[in-house]
Image 1: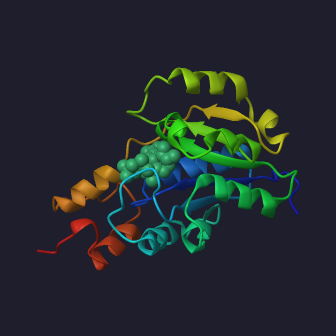
Image 2: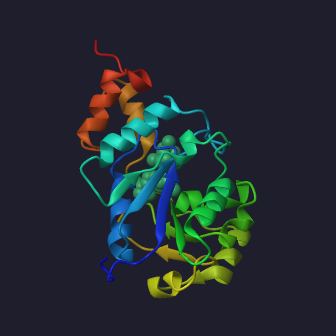
Length: 220
Ligand code: ATP
Ligand code: MG
């Protein structure tokens, strides 16, 4: 085994409705930055915190699988979609902790928009009992944290990866990177308007959308 590879389970959850280069580039940069073997992408089954997506869970998963097919450092992880439980982040974190044992670091990667919305997530205060949270900046989402999130960040924040990976869970690390200003909303709108969403996401995902007539895609 290559001992230079850090031993941590790192994942990014989302609706991935559809997956795009903003997600993929973020996940890959985090994988390189932390020096871990891979980052798992976990599409949610029931989007608890948002509106119903424009296609089925299985189709969102299939698009993630197409998107990462040629990239060993990114893995499509079907655990939430295949689970019989509702997609609550807390359940996923508990299952991951069980699976990884008590000493392996588990890191949940999220965009700043998702992070600042945490107070609306079920039992979010317990997330750090199971994992670390890595937050990435996102263009267009430079919203000011409210008092709750400012205090949470102040209390649990650390500033470097070695500090993060020296513990199995319990910290927040904000990673400034250069994320792409792409959103799934923008892609769904382009498709519905009959405009091309090409170059915002991998071509095999676009091919899948066309093949299955997702998001109101219409050939004519
Ligand atoms: P939608 O527009 O439907 O909300 P989205 O593009 O925000 O879709 P999600 O599936 O909601 O995608 O996001 C999953 C995770 O990826 C969240 O943590 C979100 O902050 C993050 N994310 C989404 N787009 C980007 C991006 N362009 N750069 C960095 N992170 C992103
Ligand atoms: Mg979103």
